[in-house]
Length: 519
Image (cartoon, rainbow, N blue to C red; front, side, top):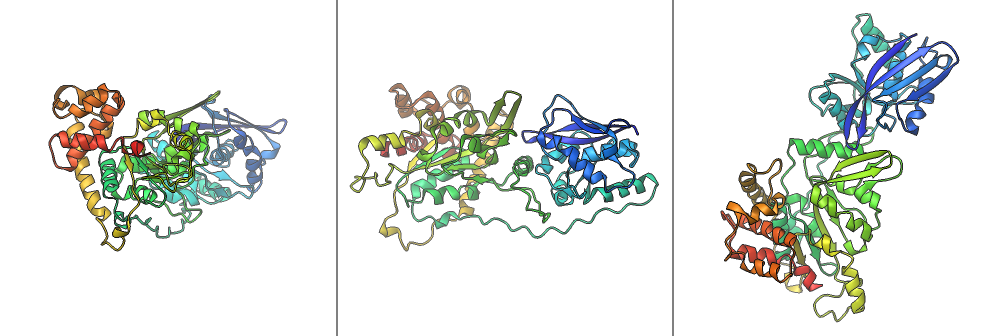
């Protein structure tokens, strides 16, 4: 009996950190205690480890005094992914497996009562953190092996049962060859169908706004009666956005791994997400579901799942006002910080917001509104649920008119591929312009307002005359002024101009207050 050590990985938000697992086994009064600020799932790990250890010869854990420490002991740890590391540390302390070998190996997985090693969520960020910490070997459940192998620079060893893992370590100790567990071949992963923009009938102005939003990374509001095509337009935004680069792809895939939406059951199917995600929560979603949080374990919300993608809020006025108000800070900072009495977690949330709203509760309050059954007070209160500070952060606000009979039977409009090519070209121009001045992603929507209002990037007064008058009269705020300038630069980029002119500023300004004026 003695001391055994190995490694595990814990999650802090969607990022992993290395955990040293120590096990001290001695004779005396039998017991099994785990220290290191673990949650209830870790506390119950003792029962799973003792049941699994009873299947291994000469490993009477139930008759020994076992003390487990998870270091750093002051960092809160959650989940069942520590089970396998605790089992291996105990086995090393009891001399069943070579302590000097497992000390540097990272073990991830849940252990069942029958000794099976079961999959856990979040394996991709866990293995990625292990690789960044210098680990070269990691043992994971068979069902998580394909996901773990997406991380470069680390050897992944699948494990199906703890008894089989012990036999492999014993063979390694004696210098015998070991055989890896065969991972079932992953089935072909079907690509998600991309919805094409040509399916939308008419709506030339709304399509233009969608293209501008995609090119510059701008937020968008689509307001109009039911059936006008607001949802169809929003669903086609990801199809005209450029694919994710390698860093963004790893970040997005890691987030979906943590929330359990990445791995396809036990099939072993795994691949990096290369397309911008599209997340559309129901209007009855709680603040914890949209922003993140929850009781006990803090989980990422819809805004984090939409990181580097699109967050679509259909029927926006039906959302709880506290949920909508909570979007303001993430829209500005690109992160969301969730604080608890004993925990503080920061999630990434750099997303593109698309709002859709009817003009009134009955949906018929557009045009002359002859069919509208709502009172003027009800109409003002309904659209007024989208607060002014939130609307001020939405760059493009477009009123979507219902398509008329003359549009039915017309040939299909422009396909998404053609629009996506212009968007990609525009983003390349923006990257070349702003990259020397801005770290990371350099889109027009990310440029500080002070940079556009001063120095070499300031537009002539003759170009911004109408915009200046709107600011002086209080029609728009200074934030709205800056966001209109950003949109004008995007319009100019799409037109192939070196700098936007008066027409581009006029168009950006007209697309900003259109929806509110119509409502």
